[in-house]
Length: 310
Length: 239
Image (cartoon, rainbow over the protein chains, first blue to last red):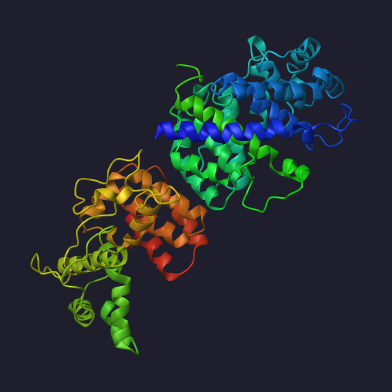
């Protein structure tokens, strides 16, 4: 059973990573882009997500040599898009309250790609009560805390109160599992991602929340797979890989492999997939990122590696 | 109450058939509330068995046999057993035989469905094309829901043993049914959770708010009956 998950998950993630690498130029920033970013969600945020996937492939080192090379090249591509970090620096310099420069920087920091002026600015800005007190959703607050942890800013007087951050989320309330909706599903997945740093630190999920997620995860995967919400299904499969005892069901992996296209595209849902290459990338880039991460973590966890030994 | 229903009906034969459709739950007012069971009520139920006799032999449990006749046989047994109990009939004198087997649950993270699961085919959990098996928690919980009239005090058998062995699968099944907006199925499965909770078993899901949710969101007489019985089991309503 475990061997079949390892094999299928490797195949899904290798293909998704290859697809992200092959089509990376479709996700390049327009030539006239400045740090002001009129629409940060259009290209800037997806670039950060591709970098995140690549950084986790490199962190786990569970992929083959080809995939590790693709991941390094994808990291380099994204870093160049961000002006070797200068753009993130300029953006934070101009907009002190924005958290995306830190969140976007974290995957690079994880892989040892650093930008010293940005780090000095982050250390100052992220410690300000004004920034810490900003009004954001609890799972978004966790995203910032985890980025700060990865960048080495979660320490000393500025350490985050992880327990309080966890309790503030929807998941932290261990709510009735039968009332969850699609958007709340994403809140749950991200709460787990950030508390565990994408499966690198499974103990970061408090014990009672671990038990809660382990109890209800199979139900949520089942109902969203039935209505072909592949993006959320794959995110929930990442959640399974983030648990101290990973939940990686062979049937889930075989199903995700079946919906993946031959070129590596993973459709975000059951709707028809466009033919136009730009549109394909725009619509399904996020799901490829999610599938690459899910597969990488599933391979690593089923092999018993990478996630910290406790 | 049962006899009154038949007497008042324009079509007594249809009324007797309806008793069998409601099945063992027709006895819920006597078991869970203060309705008085009269000899005429017993006569009406006995007459329904005479008019619509259950098969003499019980069908094989699935997967060897078809599911539907086997489910009906269990529901007939439940009704016949409670009739015998309420009329102090001789043991073994029930009007329907006891089938064998219980819904089979084979899930990696579940204990097997109790010791009293006679007549099972070990090949029952072979996955189909979609990787699903006929004995996963999804299908198992639906099948347990189809047997919800057995979730009454005074009945005991392999189906009850299976329910007690798998509160997690019942809770997952109820949750899945709510999320799929299949409220009647959710109510049927939640009855088993209510029965387990009433027996003092720890269940992974609080049935109380779930029943209220189903009562307010679901519709139809069958759901109303399942919810009402579950609430009685949990002593949320008395008298």
